[in-house]
Image (cartoon, rainbow, N blue to C red; front, side, top):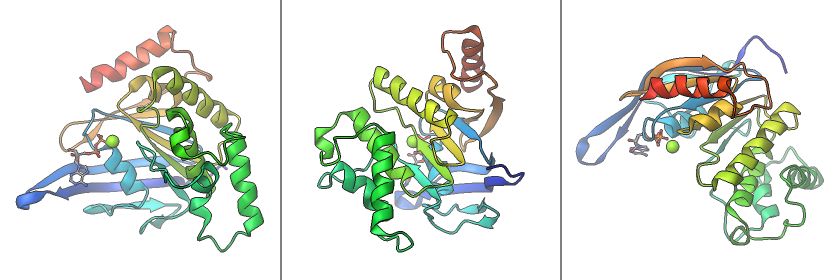
Length: 255
Ligand SMILES: Nc1ncnc2c1ncn2[C@@H]1O[C@H](COP(=O)(O)OP(=O)(O)O)[C@@H](O)[C@H]1O
Ligand SMILES: [Mg+2]
């Protein structure tokens, strides 16, 4: 998909959470982020700086205190199946099987037949390499497998935009590396259906690994400290000077 229009744009967004005893917390202020069609955008910043808040706003889950989100040329009002958010801790339903968890977002879709839904779920199970685990329950899966199921569930609606909230942070380093490689591979091979991906993380390495461009956040309320294009060819090798230099450059902006 190529289009000169941005896929999504946060324009001048400020968000304030109301806390107890009448106090409030301004998390982000006048933040503008534009995501192009076909772009893999990374957002890094320290824990608590507002990364998850930004994704929830982009997903239409929370309405910003001020400012707007423009998605495919129109103001975003609430959630849509064209935008999927994969949460930091995948909220899989423990009483549903792998198949049922992935099928869940399709239940209320009347534009698809049961057969079309079945095919979609099966294709995704194949894509995330969980064939044979269709009737397993979440507790029977490893952390990496659960994360894969969450990814499949985020992809089952064929979203234009996939939002990844620290997708590897609850995994052991090796599993994180494998899943990151798989996402990179799917992205390169265009088997990852969304046009664009936004991934947030406090882990600079994993963001540099996957992104075309990295936005560095910092401060309270958070603002954009820098935007760093990552032009390294893919698949990327962490053990190169080019990679170290980029990670260092971003690290020094945050610290
Ligand atoms: N629902 C909420 N109500 C009140 N404060 C919140 C809520 N969600 C997040 N916060 C606060 O907003 C700040 C940013 O949170 P978050 O967006 O989760 O940051 P990050 O994802 O970068 O760690 C934190 O100080 C957090 O405690
Ligand atoms: Mg977060």
